[in-house]
Structures are given as C-alpha cells and as structure tokens.
Image 1 (cartoon, rainbow, N blue to C red):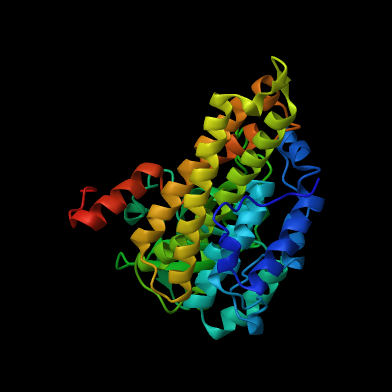
Image 2: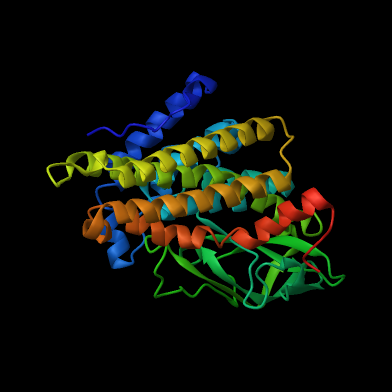
Length: 389
C-alpha cells in the first residue's frame, strides 16, 4: 500500500512543485530501498551496505550546496523534506546524511578554502567519500568549550592530539572535520584524512539505538597534518556551533518522518484490528491517542515549515532552531511510544516500525544538544539570563 503523508492542515499548499518532486523521489527510494530491509540490518546491528553512495545517487548529500561543488543547489525547505523522508525509513539513514551534509560539507563550503571545496565537496556529494564530525569528547559533551583536543604548530604542519567519541560514520569515514584548540586556546577546524599516522577510528559496539549506522571514536596520537588542512575562515566555537545549527534544523524535520510512520502504522492497524466485535479504532482511548498524534504532528510540521522559511531568508536564530529540535524530537518520541502501545504485543515486533523508531529517537533526543540543554537555550533567550553557569 502506498504511503500517504499525514497533512491535516494542507501544508502542501505552502510547498513549491520542486519541493513536492524532491519529496516524492526520496520517498520512493526509501520505500523501495530502506523499508524492506531496515529491520534486518537493525536486528543484526549492521550498517546498511553502500548507504552513502546510495544517498549520493539520489541527491540527499549536501542538497543545498551549489551545483559547482557537486550539490543540487536546493533550498533549506528541500533539505528538511529530504531529512523527513529519510527518517521515515530510519533515523540511522537520516543521521548518516545529516552528518555528511551539515557537519562535513557545510563547514567545508562555509569556512573552507577554494582548494578544500574543490577537493572534497564533489566527492562527498556523490557519497564516494564519507565524512564525519569530531566535536564531542569523553569529558566534554554539552560543554564543547571545555574541549581538550588541541594542536601545536610544527613548521608547515600541526601536531594534533586528543579524542572524540559518539561520532557517526567514524569507522567508515575517509575524512574527519576535527575541532581542536590551537596554541592560543582558540577553536579551529582541521580536515584529517584516513591513513595519516596516529589517527584511528575504533567502532562503538553494543548500541540499543541507531543500530543500522556505524558509530565510533576518533583517536589522535601525535597526528601530523599540513596547515593547508585547517579551515581558514572561522575561529572559535562559532564554527562547530553553526554546523550544529544546520544539523538541528535537519533533525527538526527528520523526526517528523519517524512520527508520521508511527502514526500511519497505528491508524492502519487499529482500523483493521477487531476486538469486542468492532475495529479498535472505534474506541475512545484509541481515538484520543490518534487525535493527539495528528495534532502534534501538525504543530511540528508548521514549526518546521516556518523555520525553513526563516532559514531560506537567513533569519533563523540558533534559539529558534533549538526550540524546533527540542519540540519535534519530544513529539516524535511520545508518538512512537503511544503507537507501540496501540499495537499491543505486536508493537514490539520487527514487522512494525515503532519500537525501532522509539529506540533511535532516544539517541536523537540526546545528540546535537540534549533535550534539557535546548530547554535552557530557550530559557536564556526569553529571559536574557544564562542558566549554564
């Protein structure tokens, strides 16, 4: 049966024909390439084979990057729509695309030299090269300013030391955008290529979440990198935080896809499942859940769409992005839990997506800024008082 997008407020009227064409092409690919096998890879704790090249072929990597650098030159709403459709398939798929797009291609395009752009962006856009983003450390998650990874200058090179963890794509990455402090204590971005001496990427095992994607660490032990690998046009935490803003924007759209999948599954199941002589969708408690789900999805859609408009106009603030990320992830997590309950025992089975989405969203509610940190970002924005210190 063809998937039907929940659109209670006719938000399609706010989209362009290009937006709808992009959505349909990604949706078709997810339906054909991801949905039939995602449970298999999740259960086996195995990354989807050749996922990055597949994402490159459908134009899902760096879609807002200009065509001259291998991107599709699409707008921010198109990027959001792509993330939404990918996460309907699985958060691991969206995470892989999100990291490549917002955390690797975005900083190289925004802060990189022309040589760096020409060398890396077309390869990253095609998925022939895989990238990862190194910010979080063993001792520093919500406080990136406390990072310990650093480098010292050595002639035309730098010597990089430190460790990063919870890094999506690390075990399969060809390059890493690593954020480290220079000798003056200022944060800079460095492109580190696989194969350089002292650079290793051990894989993180035994995850209960995002099991269909590769996660790992970045270990840098006297890694010697040429100075030409430093991103020249940014200094300080503005660099990594701007990348996170782009990724959080994509997440705020992406999780709507997971919520939609759970809602559509619950609606179909309860309409067909009979107890006490009639479909269980006819009972008040089931209707309450469904009505709340579609209401919350609709609010999240409108929040994401408006944020997309502001992003296109270069008016979206970090605090606005934080609000959308926090609200929409929380919404999707609640819907996945309610939908799981509506299917009873069948809700835990791999044939249905809710338990998988629920487990994935437990990571999404934590990464790119935790639920509570985004709450404090909003609190600081409306009060003008910093509660972090």
